[in-house]
Image (cartoon, rainbow, N blue to C red):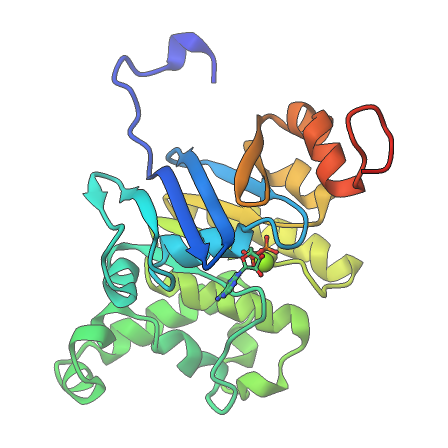
Length: 264
Ligand SMILES: Nc1ncnc2c1ncn2[C@@H]1O[C@H](COP(=O)(O)OP(=O)(O)O)[C@@H](O)[C@H]1O
Ligand SMILES: [Mg+2]
């Protein structure tokens, strides 16, 4: 963004995380993480296995209770709110290991995500004449992710790439201000990954901001506005792709080399 187009008002972050810690006994899964995700941004998060990436998502979503630190969604402190409340405030996610209701249809998997279901039983919802509107919205998200023609199939019948897309459609149905994607390309073949990259580009305008955890560096490089690298629960680098992917501490974390290039 060129400076003459910048608003004189400072943009408020969609997500602000401060000094966030999550400990499991002696293991520091998160050890003082500070980060911000700005409106419209895709923040890429990388780090070797065990770095704390999933713990970060689990703690933001309230699936894990933070040991200490703060998490703010817009102006709202969400650090100690229960998971369903955080979801309703507008935090959506996908899981590293895809989680779908396999016995339900593709469409039903999206329907369960509508916020309204969290407060009204399905019968009263349909009775109140919302049925058409909710179905249309669900079909809209499925169409956006090329799943409309599979709406009535069982979720169990989907290919891996389609199952991942369904998880994303379900997250979008919650109308998220912040979408957290945990290794969406893991287990995908080359063409599925290419399609996923197009899909993430397409949906970024439908959500306030995205945090993308990914091991596929091509995807991280192409999609992320900024990248944050983690190791042992700490932030080890942050910046643009060139700065982070060439950072000595990042190379060391991935390759197990010390800064002189010797085996650690
Ligand atoms: N529920 C848990 N109980 C105990 N240890 C956990 C739990 N979740 C994560 N950890 C530990 O926290 C560290 C970070 O894990 P994780 O966030 O899954 O890493 P990543 O997603 O970066 O591969 C690891 O050492 C892991 O074993
Ligand atoms: Mg993980």
